Length: 357
Image 1 (spheres, rainbow, N blue to C red):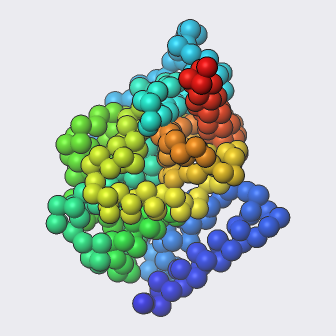
Image 2: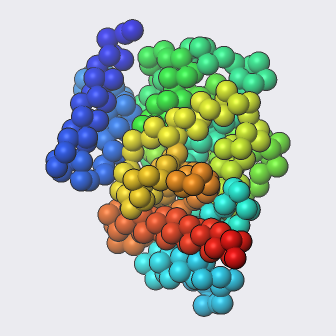
Image 3: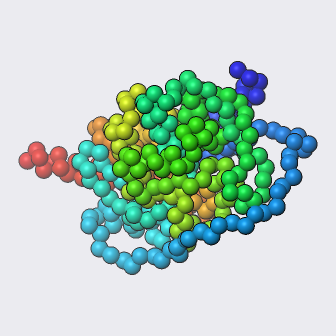
């Protein structure tokens, strides 16, 4: 194992240890997604190695849409109405979808509206690679280099420059990309499958719509903040909450991947260590969660599978913008996730009571 990788993994371990320390500020907080991106997102460079920034190039026009808050409406059920009340649009858009994988029961608030994928795209990237494993194109032992961003000015090129770094196995890259939201690892997998267009092709072949990738992670992060997601709908690198829960549900049920590949992805999602103040924050200790977080300018998200003590599984996607800052966005996600959990549990217990009469 190369010295650079050892140093990086030791740094990760130090971060994880600090965050796990009982009573520490880190344990109470949730800066993991940012911290792991800082530790693993790039390797140290001396001033001599920092290239001069190229001039900004003309950019293509982007067709965006201004968000108009929906007028109040009657929701189909009390759970949806409750979620809508927690996702009031006054401080920014919030999109929510949940799907009970046992009954097919779905709830949705702005579920058909596009939201920034951010790092939740890494679920689709990993799934595309694992589909290639199932087809014999790749092996989990195949080695690929981490793709580390090279310093460049925002919008200075259509694709942000990267450089090849430490070689890692595909299995290791999936683990880093999902559990620690590592951007160079995700871009390594993305390059291996053929870029965003390959992910989009896999999504189409799976029959999934409402989700698209347009840029690699390095470019997405470098050019972040072009539009305010709280007030503007940018279709690039976006997903609707309903599309995401369809993807999550299908992956969890093994709809598109072999059992071994499905277990690699869902297993990694179950070991996610980022953003502990989001979906997992208010769930009961006996509830399970396999999830992936996402963070960009003025937006935060958390998507995954929540399992209940009685063995039911619920696919959940929560995308939050605005709300006055990251702590408020995280709190919205946590509150909505708990409302979904309690709502589905209440409905299930009501059904059981009715059936027993």
